[in-house]
Amino acid sequence: MINRPARQTSLRPARRSATLPGSEHAALAMRLTRRDRWILRMLHEHRVLTTPQLAVLAFPTLKIARRRLLLLHRAAVIDRFRPFRAAGSAPAHWVLAPAGAAVLAAEIGVDVRDLAYRSERAVAIAHSLSLAHTVGVNDWFTRLANRHHQDSGLTAWWSETRCQRLWGDLTRPDGYGRYTHRGHTLDFFLEYDLGSENTGQVTRKLHGYAELARTTGITTPLLIWTPSADRETHLRHALTISHRNLPEPGAVPVATAAADLLHHVSPSASPADRVWLPLESAATGRLRLHQLAAAWPHLTVAPQQNTATTTDSLDPGPHQLLPAPPPLPPRDEPL
Image (cartoon, rainbow, N blue to C red):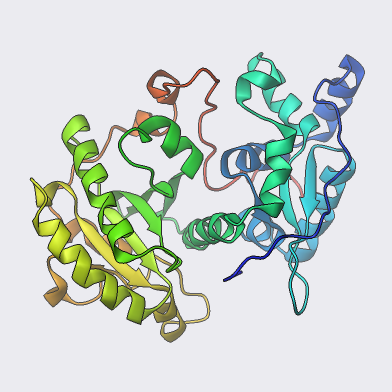
């Protein structure tokens, strides 16, 4: 992960028009697979994904991922850049290109501008100081989605942008997810902490989540992911005080975890592992992600259709809000 992002090297792609002739649309329609279209939707939803992240989510090997992504780049539906690193080289970072946005718009019969897509904004993240945070959040969800088994897995993953458009007047989580395990469901908000905010900035966010719970009548846990155990310990002390002062503390269940705890689990560890510590019941010890649901028996799960079909009706903005793509792509096609 890039801990202290500097200004990125200028590798902006040449500008391409988002308006494609009918013949080019027809050609792309024949060349793009269902998985390709899923990649376009994921880049539209999450802004930027790296080659290793897409390889984990959608391909059997990194080599196959690189080969397919290069073909999509040559088809002009995705663009790429490489962040500057003082030592070594960063993986390719992929963003949605204008032609890719045109494909998504054509699928639902709207203009590209109705998707709130702007090519300048898409590539601007290459120079943004929030790049490390965005890539970190996406890596967190990627690792969780990779822990997908027959009886458990990540079934919903909403971006910071989607969360902001839906609830931004109350709170702005870094992501929303739904994790299932053997028939049990845990909805959650994620706050991905890089240690750059002071404790006061973090604890003040609890009031926004409390107001959201009061407004919606839905109790959704808040998961706070910290970079180190020391940061977690320091933050938990401040969070405990602020949490107890909420009007209804039970409406905002909170659990924390530290990234360096994963080093002691296994090389393939993920946020689903035994790293979570509930704020008000620390005596239980670290829990796995799915065990948090049992730690908070009063949780209310939002209706399943809210993760896909009703987001347009909730959207207060003027632009079309595409249904969130599933965390994993369709698998029923040749590689």
